[in-house]
Amino acid sequence: MNKQEIRKVILKSGKDQSLRRFHPWVFSGAIKKTEGNPVDGDLVQVFDNKGEFLALGHYQIGSIAIRVFSFSDIVPDREYWTGKIRSAYNYREALGIAGSASTNIYRLVYAEGDAMPGLIADFYGGTLVLQFHSVGMYLIRDVLTDAFSEVLGDSLKAVYDKSKFTLPPFKGAPSENKWLMGEKGDISGLEYDNKFMISVEGGQKTGFFIDQRENRKLVGAMAKDRKVLNMFGYSGGFSVYALRHGADLVHTVDSSASAIEMAGQNMALNFPDTVKHEAIVADAFDYLDREGGNYDMVILDPPAFAKRRNALHQALQGYKRLNAKALRSIQKGGILFTFSCSQVVSRENFRKSVFVAAANAGRTVRIIRQLSQPADHPVNIYHPEGEYLKGLVLYVE
Ligand code: SAH
Image (cartoon, rainbow, N blue to C red):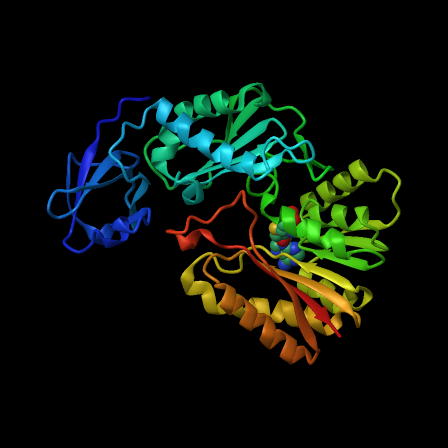
């Protein structure tokens, strides 16, 4: 472990309550004073106003000033991080996600959900992609890489750091994304026996939207004989499942040409001879206006419309408009899968937007299922902010 000295932070009176309920963030306004002038990334011990130890975390200048990873006063050395990563792995293994023969694409560490705020680790058939969201985690990347190697053993071939755009500016910030271990090869993996090429370096997020695995499976279960529009389709995840399970035709639409190219490749990888798939570069709103009436299954999985709370109203308008277009045009007896991955949009607000969209479209709509994120994106019960993915499956008459 790199030898960081531990600084101290003392909270204002009464500001210890959320830590006592195991919420892992300390906001800057809760701090009474600091000792040892902590800077971005420093390890800090947090004490209440009377000097009682509360937590250990990483300091960072900003609204969230401390991200807590331990409520006991331990020494966060390599062995400690190995233990935490092993616990994240064991949880996924117990649930049949890690170590499965049919799936080797999964999220191994989901930040607060695994009590490691600031760290995302996605596993793609031997390649681990790390995305650091806090300076403190970034500074211990070598320790973490060793810990991942120890837990994953021979199954780990390469580790890529993709944090250039996820960290705030600080002294020593990465100027590029880079390989921390092993080297780039063809990166591919299996999800319920479906094959996917993963564009780790050039793709969005860490390369793939792992969080839709269970929802893709459900699309498969309902797709037989349907004409499917996979809108915001990225690299074709939902499309592969739909075709695998007997869809009549599948159209993948995305505004990004590189995403559409990947979708074509993934389709060809799974179904070399299919003539039932087409990948189309288009804007969602335009395409639904033009072609929405051709389908009896539509998937809407847009990017986060609101990244910040002050964009909430606009985001809700966006969901209403998009869903109204899809609901107006989908064929009678059609099934709409509609999602929101904006953390600031609550499940209730999303459902309300879709309700208004249905009313505006004047269709009779039943809710078949309500969807969320899978078990490898766990929500820490003390940190409800970790819940972000919401979905509705609707039957449209
Ligand atoms: N459903 C995908 C993930 C979607 S991510 C999966 O399962 O893998 C959101 C996608 O929406 C991105 O690929 C992005 O390129 C695309 N996108 C963003 N704005 C768009 C627009 N106006 N019209 C169509 N696609 C858009």
